[in-house]
Image 1: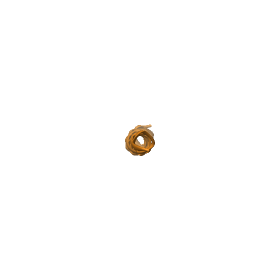
Image 2: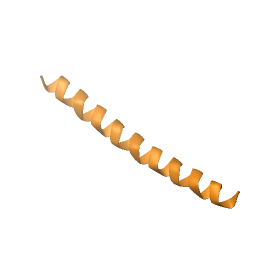
Image 3: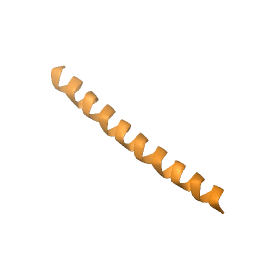
Image 4: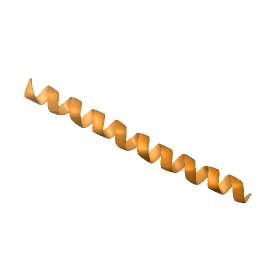
Length: 36
């Protein structure tokens, strides 16, 4: 049971990280579009 909980925590943290990265990437793309 403990292992499953750790797995869930790991997955949620990974998702949060990817969301942050995605947001960062989108902001960079928007900046580049403004320059064009």
